[in-house]
Image (cartoon, rainbow, N blue to C red; front, side):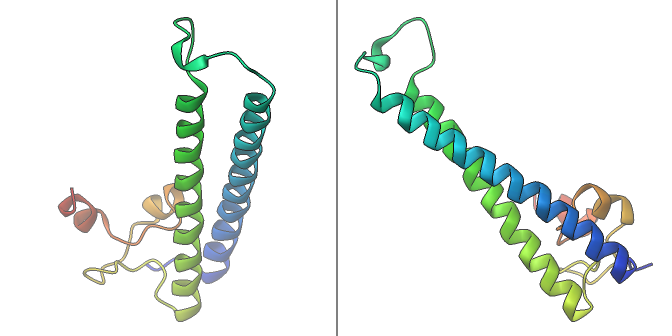
Length: 118
């Protein structure tokens, strides 16, 4: 059974809001780290006591890139909803189970096709 458009739209909107908040928080952390780095003169790259600023920055930038990919996936899900194909597998056309869409609102594949990609 395909998801109800109103339910799907609400689910996607909620996920978009959460993802946008995550992007904003990560962007603030990256900016804060840059500010912190500009205020210090110590050599964090050779500090045996902690994580380097470069490592922390790379980790935050990776998380930020992932969050932006999630937002792009939500954009594609909105397009599928508008086209009437949301909730159908892009590979085989089978319905995507509601529990999968609850967990991953931007899911593009059914469980069988997602398993094949691994």
